[in-house]
Length: 571
Image 1 (spheres, helix red, strand yellow):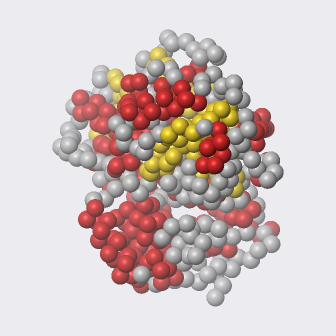
Image 2 (cartoon, helix red, strand yellow; image 1 turned 90 degrees about the horizontal axis):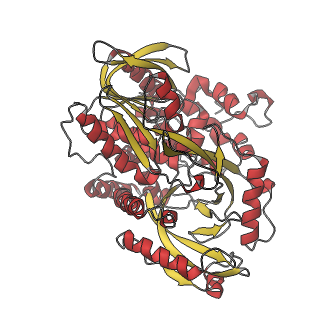
Image 3 (tube, one colour; image 1 turned 30 degrees about the vertical axis):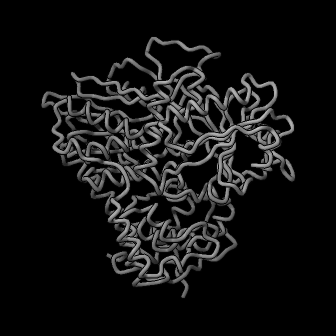
């Protein structure tokens, strides 16, 4: 059976979810309006909603659509801050990393870092190893013990490393996000909505003020439809990431802090090492440089370039810097070139300064990624400066405390608002998956069993996916070639994850666009079916919007698999 774009309409549930939330945003009064749905806004929403506040969360783009989708995918304790003597910050970040590993064992996982130290570097390998040992102690011995490696041992442990210029190295542990950063952020958005938060993407704030009735009134616009409306809230949190200062100008808020910006880029290439570890070097300019695993690929970076604004892009100079540095330090069959680059990541780190603080070119790179909660109790307004993935739980807790001081009632102050579902729920899921024979349905080229994958990505909601598969076993088939996404995942995404554009799915709800070449996606028959599931009648438009090419000009047909959706997908 041949079907065209638009033959499936389960996306209506997701569209309806966003439309319903927008109606609520315009008609209800909220305890807190959070502007910006990156990691800081997402954890603030989850923490406050989980403790009983009535919360609204908006972003002018997609959830995690800026800085939070361009990190190194690491949850690390800040080992580099040892050099600047910020032991307190390192201790705080290590404790946060440990808490994330415990709270999200399926998602945030310990990984070994193998560090190579070249001759002539400012510190000897053994001195740096002692620093890694101190790092392990500061981290409460939570991870595996570091070990020192002489040059010959280094090459035996990781043959791809070129040890000819090395004085030795060491191995230590931190943590990595198994899926991707934007997916991790969306998990908090989804959790916040479970607690009753009203969230919507592509809602732009035009600013507002506190009126005589005691409420903040914000004028916002739905960037998809052009509709404007007002959101009313008792308190406001500016979580706009690198745009915090700009939004504070819209609301005439004066703060004690400001941002400066550092651009970091990563290049994604085919997997360089078969071992699941992070390779760490010191680049030609002396700063840390990584090669990180991402499924079948390797992520190489990052740069650290001061930029004047939050808008940044990858330049030819950036690409060449990354390629030159990795080629110098690995033994490859042939040097990596720009033709080997599958995808790129470019993000801007917002670094915190006091308003009257000055920084010169020589020392600005020493600024840490600490966060600051800048609060104005008189106007009931909070600005969140800086921050990083590792410290996200602290941000949520600190914001909750401050909102409580503003007089907002939080009836469930002691509720643990983060973490994976309880063990009993996991065990019930595994029992049902075993009865269904789920792991026997795993594709031969998949990197892990289906039961593990679905639980990590969807938690307790994966139990409902088992029912989809039980009714229709084709729901367990991989839909998009060269990825591991099965059909029922696309239906669930359409129903529950507020995907508006194809980039929302390929870049943020998943990492497909980061590990599959653009031309392979463009020729994917399975992606065409996924578009029909996600967008229904708008599928062709969303395809053309993403690929920038008229559908009829493609050489491939529009034929897709005719799989009837499960009953609840039709609802």
